[in-house]
Image (cartoon, rainbow, N blue to C red; front, side):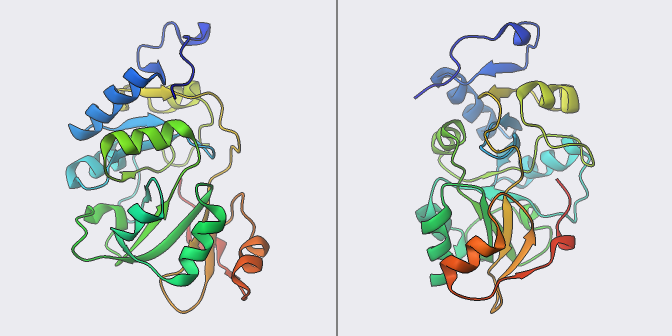
Length: 232
């Protein structure tokens, strides 16, 4: 299903903003395959995506955002099945995914060593943060690429996360060749980030899904350490 087939008046002079039609999503996927970055909508905020398998493409995200290389990226997948190809999963994480995916929850797990993900997505760590976004355009883009999309928020580091195509345009300008317009983000708040790579369960970034909701699903205590991940 394509969305926003008509070009809004405010986008008329924005050559990088494309309504997220089927053709535009295919074009965006082609750019990703060629190693470019593309901005796209999710239910949380707009993301700046790159092919998560390509080291060079992922490094392009850091350059476009002026983002410190020590900050890991969230890798977007279509569903739990795709996540299992790239991470060492466990029953607790699967339970959370069943409850909150697709949706605004990013789950940190151990990377599979032979999965082929770019090293830059993990910033030198042996873990990877995975999320299945709920926005149809994000889902279609990942499916069209056929592999995960690494994507932090589509803005210069240290600025407000974008919730509309115009926010992306104003923040990144020429650094992003294509912005898929999928309307304003429904939530407008970054995903909750939870570390499930070890024995403890710790929320590293506050988001739409509350620790109390996670604890209720897991039936166990959930720790918080919000100061660990603040970069967008």
